[in-house]
Amino acid sequence: MATGDKWTLSMGCHKGTLMSRDNSTEKCDSLEQCRQRVVEAERSWARIGYYVWYADATGPNGEKIKLHQGTPYR
Image 1 (cartoon, rainbow, N blue to C red):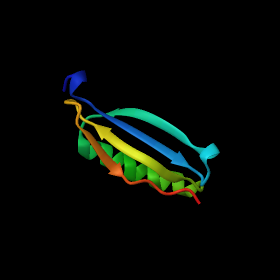
Image 2: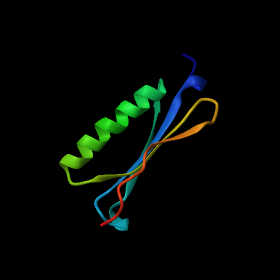
Image 3: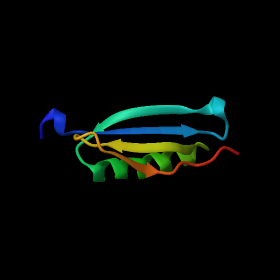
């Protein structure tokens, strides 16, 4: 797979406040791998009291897919 064929996964988390937000971006080999990373991150973040802020995947062709609707602030 060529580097240009990678998917870009953008995710963010929060702990219930605007000040507790953080985000990251990583490359994945497929949309399915992006989806799996979101599931893994959601579980990991939940263990430390954080929620998914957002999760989007951008395909090699520029198509953007929302993978998680996000969890509202409390």
